Structures are given as C-alpha cells and as structure tokens.
Image (cartoon, rainbow, N blue to C red; front, side, top):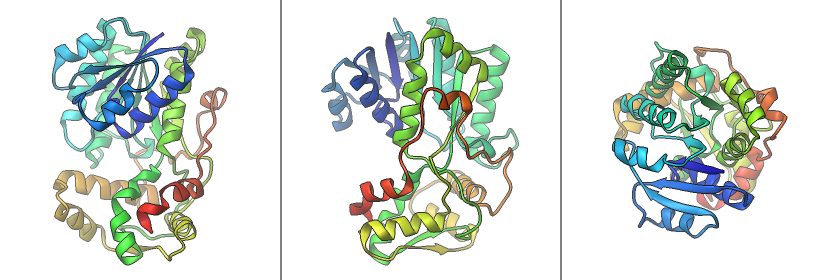
Length: 305
C-alpha cells in the first residue's frame, strides 16, 4: 500500500509518518516544502519513507505527489481563508488520481459552522459542504482540544508560573487529546482493509478525543506536578487575550478565532454543534487513545520548568 502524508512535517503529520514507518507494511510518501529542513531529513531517515517536494499552492506538485497513491492523509495550516482553497484542491486532485480515501484533520466539531466567527471552523464547514456536494471519499477526524496548544505558553509559565487564558478555569471538562493519539487514530484508519475503510467513509466524521475529561485548571495542576513548580491559569478578558496574541504577531482574524475556540472548549460559550467528548464507536473498534494529560505534562515538563 502506498500512502501520501501531506504535510509530513506538520505536528500530527510527522508523528503519523513515524507510526506508518514502524508498521513496516506500507510505503510512505512524505510531502514537504523544504527537503533540506531538519524535520524532512529526520523523516527521510525512517524505513519505507520517500520524501517528495510539494506545496499546497502548487497544483502540479500535488498532482505529481498523488501519482500511484492508494490512500492519503491531509492536514494544512489554519488561520486564513485560503485553507478552503488548498484543501479542496487537494481533495479534488486525489479524486482524479483514484485515491481510495483521504483522511483529513478537521477541528473540534462544536466549533464548526458556516456562520461561525472562527476562521478555521468556517473553513472546515465549507470543506464539509464541498465533500458532501461532490461525494468525495474523505474521512474527517474531529479532535478535541490539543494538549500541545499550551506549548506556546511555555515561556510565560517558565517566567511567571502563569498561563494566560480568556476563560474561567473550572467550567467544562473536556477530553483533551495528544497529537500522538490523533496520528495514531489516523494511522489505524489508513491501514484498515477495504471493507472496514468503507465503513469509515460512510461514517464521514470521526470523533477523536483523549482518554479522560480534564478542565484547564486540572491541566495546569498536571504541569505543576510534573515540573515541581506551581503553574496556574491567569484569567483575562477575551478582548485583552486577543490583543495579547496580536502583540505576538498573530493576525487579528486568527487571534479572535483562537480566543473563540478557547471560550467554546472551556465552556464560557456554547458551540455551533454538540460538545462531543467520546471517540466514535467505530474508531474504538480499531484503536483507543492512550496519552493522558499527566503523561503529556511529564513529556513536556522541561519546557515549562
């Protein structure tokens, strides 16, 4: 079986390449923009991995990468309106190439809606509509809050013992998920026999969540335990949080979107759809999440200590 991972140097994509490579039964094409990067070189050293150079903005490079591919994985950058264009172009090219299925990373289902304020939630809603209208062979993974979202706050936690958030710290517990688990779920689906793969294509939307429910406050407690220092949530107004992100160089559109995401996941506002916290039963037949918040905190303690 030949599987294309695009983009292979993305957080989830790189972990997926590692899992598929370790499986030993497939050949992996890893799509990267810069084959000379450290990330690309690390992937190139893995068994059964071939690096292919391409860019979502270059249609011909995507078509070339899809030649001879049986199944594909898709994750692309969020944050602006071009996400719809590049992912739909990839899905269309995959269909033309006869790819059996595209497993793509969507976002938390509660965020998604055509009228959502969040830029990436709106993009995913539009992509969903395209897939439905064209009967595309696409499987959407809808992960919960990524534990790794807090890595951008590591410097603040290291300096002040605080992680600034725009939401009360004890509202809604959510099934936070490790990117390694999301990659594991994607690998499990991509490696299914054809009959089982068809079940996932029919299901369309696959909930991918962590193995436990935790609040943001409990996540901070896990980091405190792992680092041996007190780390707590510093709550500020949503507008102030968005301004802070923009001060770090984030666009206003994306800063407001990420603020909206935290407010929704944390329970300060309702979602566009129900707040799912359990993995899809069909997924649990072939895979189960294993990385807890405590495990994630232990693995990343040095960044926060």
